[in-house]
Length: 313
Image 1 (tube, helix red, strand yellow):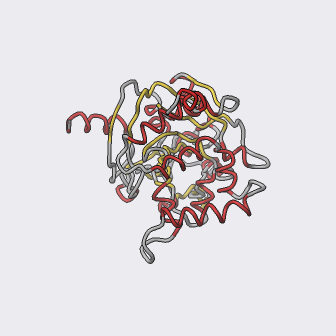
Image 2: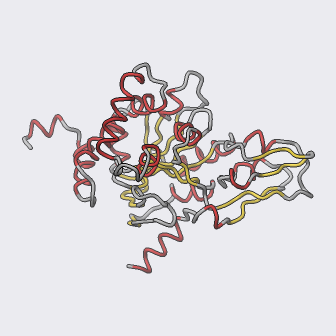
Image 3: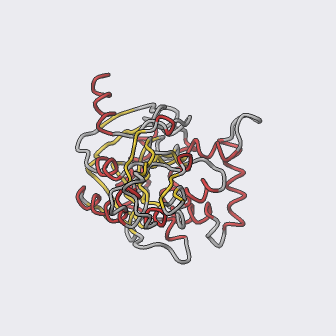
């Protein structure tokens, strides 16, 4: 590339491209897709959620191109499942989300089929993990009356942080690990759910922690429309009926509508609970706890995964 060409292309874009070339199975289309997603996230998410004024024009084109390039052989998988395989979020309880923004060493953990049971985007590869940016949430920004604050999406590690800071300077800023933990704690207290997000176009790996509400979040919208792009944490909430006073606070804050009041007590529908832990901390009586639930998959416990990776090395 000539000197003039390098001046036209930001350094973070070149780093993103070089990292893509080092990533097995990552194609030029994947890079272009990732560039579009990270360069214009508000357009991308606005179209995907149907909130953008150009959605009616752009959404069919986008879906057609995606079906041509990413679609599975006919009869094997519908488009919703194919989309979920490429773009998904894993629920992580608050303390685990805080650990994800506290890592100080570079890590490479690949092919996490048990934790992320999708065919794509299941790696945790963190370079410069102490570099964290907070971005105005594209999902909230797309809504007419969004939840606030907007600056709640945490981008973790490079090349993602550098790219976002370069290309979204008015809607992002670099923050410390302690600032990231404060954002997570505040969002958790608001009743919002922490998800670790993975995407094929984002180098087939984890890249962000989103603080999601069912009213604004595009992933919740997709999940409720039949696209299974959200994974349970590996836990299920359990209610101690003797301690429960039937105040209904847990039901009001449950983003998954998994809690029902029956005979003046909280009842959790296990099949609908994603184990986020919001209800646990909203209960003043301490009547709710998270319990490991093998039916809900394997938890994303970063310290355990890091130790397993060290032993396997």
